[in-house]
Image (cartoon, rainbow, N blue to C red; front, side, top):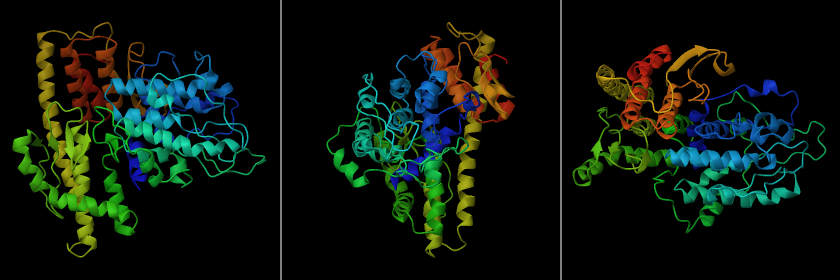
Length: 481
């Protein structure tokens, strides 16, 4: 199903930040706040782009008020903390042109909030959110409570909000809650789960997600809903970070018949889309940036780049913000086509060769990216020789790579100057580098040349890993950690 595919996409975002916050909380209500971890983590990342109330982490909004107060001491109406977090995250993501962030903020608003016993509903917010896409939604209620009768309407409201921004409305099913528990359960746990170490969310991993509506219900509900401008073609894509989700589904399709219709559609697209897309490029002004020439199962579908578009990269009609994510999708579609051909007997040699070809496809893209990064570093060096960059009202944007940042045991990335760049730590330098560039532009009011240099520094950093990635970013901007 579409929402199962999109979940893999969300998991890529979730891995960026898993803060061990709850060692600080001596007592809290029955935990389930990490059940939808991918959504929570992505919402937290968007929240931290501009966090005027200094909320420690989005996940506090899913706790009871007593525990939530420890993570949001500046919020007066804790009954509305979940809406406040979702509303701010949506605002930030919209300002950044981040469709994925908007999607996750909408889903987050609808997640069930912890209560103290099975069958106890949470208090609804009595304030109105700034964004209508958030204001129309309330949180799911305990499925054993009388208020659970509202959950179907909540999921349909989520679907309408998603459709209004151009996203796949069936992603609303991801916001659903658990099967109902037994009233009077002395553990107060019911049928919930809570695992902060599951990047997807244990409700998905353990197959506990229990939607109150069907995809057909959603499609009927969103008929006639107008898509928001700039939303792009987001159907089935919760995140650019998960563009490789089709590759995961390809493995499932090889071993079982589940979701084979989607794989077959991808296979057909991978085999047939190339010629038609290339033929139209001259007249449409698009350029195919997919350079891989492997052809097992058919060529990879073109990655069409259209200058000036809000989401400038397209693969078989699906659009992406980043070239790398689009290339991953193209390589994954080709792998699906190859695997289907091998499984049907049309291609001899088994599916292992399809895995190898996908690796070659991705390697070709990485090699091209590395060449561009080298050119960016040379350009940055020339700028440094001409004069220091202007960081506006902010100090150094340098990034460090070390263990122990933000309470982590493992090594991670974080800005040295946490006063001006207060994102926290992340395992992927892209999270910190892109946040830094956004902050330079929006808050620091740095010059256009500095913002452009930062974006090039981010690209250079992503071509490396560990300390080398931090060094590449810092060197490109002429700063040090």
